[in-house]
Amino acid sequence: MTTISRDRVRNLMAAVLKTQGKTLPNDDAADLRDIGFRSLDFSELALRVEDEIGYELNFDAPGLRQIETVGDVLDFLEQLQVA
Amino acid sequence: MPSPLGGDNRLVTGDHGPTAWSGLPRLDLPPVTAALAHSHGDALRAVWGHVNSDDELLIASAARIDEAERQDLRSSGFSIVDGGHVDPPSVLRAAEPGRLWLLTSGSTGRPKRVGHTLHSLTTVTGRQPPRRWLLPYSPGTYAWWQLVTLSLTQPSQDLVCVEPDEIDQWPQLAAREGVTAVSGTPTFWRQALWGSAPALRELGLEQVTLGGEPVDQTVLDALRETFPAARISWIYASSEAGASIAVHDGRAGFPQEWLGHHTPGRPLLKVDGEELVLESPHHAEGLAGVIRTGDRVDVVDGRVHIVGRIAGDEINVGGSKISAAAVRDALQAHPDVAWASVKGRRAPIVGTIVTADVVVTREVTEAELVAHCQRRLPDYGIPRRFRFLDEIPFKETLKSDV
Image 1 (cartoon, rainbow over the protein chains, first blue to last red):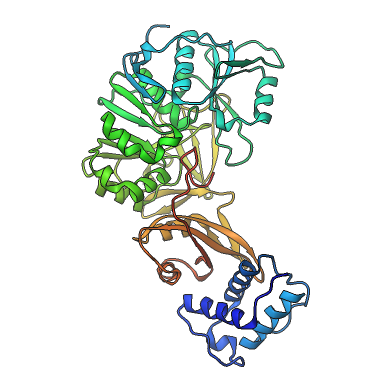
Image 2: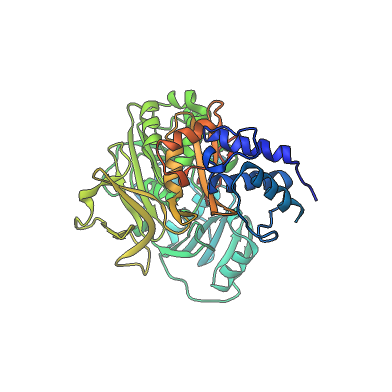
């Protein structure tokens, strides 16, 4: 099963924000609210990941949890790919 | 039947030299025929056979009729005439003289048969200026019949037929044959404006007509700029309701005061909720009275815009609803977007997000398109995934989304 690296997911996240005229900080601890990363952005990011790996992510598998920081997003999508 | 007024009109098809209606051979077709047309020539010969015999007839492009449809037609009493081959009906029934059948586009499911006659399909009755029309529509469709009946019933209305494999080169064909009037869908026109604008300007058309899909101001303005001397008209029509709205002022939408206005012999237009409903004198068999069109309207500044199908138009993004047509129109208002198609795509968290396929006239970034949309649409309506296509997708119906 194809997976993409955490760095690649970070690049995709930066691309999502850039299209919205925003910037992704380097700090994984950055709060999503501060950088304006919203649920729509998360959905878009997930689709970008799906388009690269070629299959749908199973959002039921790990159970949705609190996602507050950039690192949480990257962790979550990393986890989903191996779920 | 007496020779129709258009009997001497010239017909130009790819499979034989120019001729007139009256020069076509009289086909001896079975009394209930489904004629599968491999060319416009096949279809026009079947029409001429009907004019002279009054036999029951359905015409469809051969490419539209699959095996299931063929068997369905046979079990409904039709002989299938496919080139030189005739498949007899599997169920015999009496013919209905004068009956013509159209197949709906199938955009809302399997094609349905809709009953008409030459009389009900003839919607242009006032004397028209002499014109040579390009006929790009697929044989047997309502739009095709509109031009065919015009040519049959009025003098000096010639037809120059375009086969599907010639569609990209139609401006050259039109120039060669001296075409003065062209009718097509907005997708047809967008494709031509995008790919052949210099050749179009050389045509000097007198009449430009659009129909079959929602018509927006951007495409009307582009046509006006390309054809400054032409009358530009858009038509709202369907196989079921017939031609119901014709607008000639070069503007998208029709005047709001037309709603509820009753003129004998003209369609009565109404809006119920957000749906266009109408009563049309050109309706198909069995559809007298109010017809629910399934098309959504939007009233803006005194104009009623028909923006798209109600079913399938709405995209629900995390509980917020946006019209795909509104997003498409916003994208197509961008000066470098030649064409756009908008859909919902299943997505985690919000359920669905808006995606768009676009054809651009120069290099444009996603960020530029997003910024353009941000000035016109709510956040949830801005496309989140773009696909840049090399050319405008084109189907035999001349539409993008069917």
